[in-house]
Image 1 (cartoon, rainbow, N blue to C red):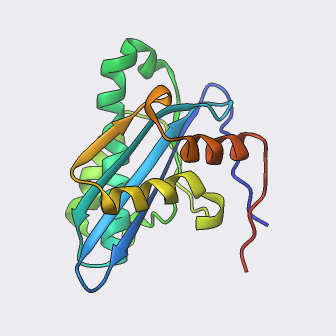
Image 2: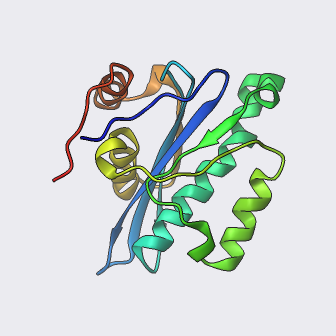
Length: 167
């Protein structure tokens, strides 16, 4: 049984995921930022080229780490007073490409954060956004009022503590 957990107040949580097609090297990445109640603050998805599934995971994580800059433009200085707790489907940064690892660490250097792994089954909204990203053209940022009913349903299931099962 895998359950998504809300961050402690006043932290916010970033979940990312990716999808990757070995034959075409096309990857989709997506993720979302939620507050301590599990409410959606920001979601994103993107289509990009990758050389492996791990590379796709790093690209999705890097895109998610860029969100604070975009996010602070929308919410002003309130961003800097929050603790940001990124969580990703699979982020083992020390094993990634060195230059990408350094860029991600530089983006996070002024934030308090933690990085951990959650199985795909506990990361359903980000998994959905990665699939959408693989079929999309370009990069898209979405807010609560502009997102799909399917994504909102997945987020609500997480808020209510509905489990997923990994077999």
